[in-house]
Length: 157
Image: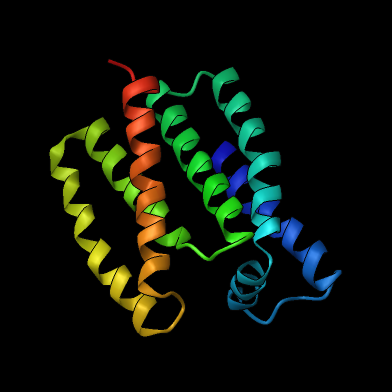
């Protein structure tokens, strides 16, 4: 429920207030388009909801691995949003890579199979002209940097 509240319900409510001022969106694509054009809103959401969600998860006794995974995803989002204020980077690649590697770390190397979607996402984002190759590589670099820091400093030994 905590994840649903902080990562779905509150962000959608924020987007409704921020973008449509009470009018109904025609589809979730409108939210995506808005966020692409307003990376500062992603940063605001990550800075407001990220730490508070971690506090709630910690307070209710969520598993440490879940808290660290959410923290890594939030860190990746914040860094990518900061970069996107000046240069576009792929949120999708950053998030999927972080989630795939930490799932494998938490539940076993079999989950590394999730990394097989990376080339498909890379190709789709490039083919649809949503990102250039350098922008996609920046998203990957953010994910690798966040992973190295979290696995070396924070991840339970």
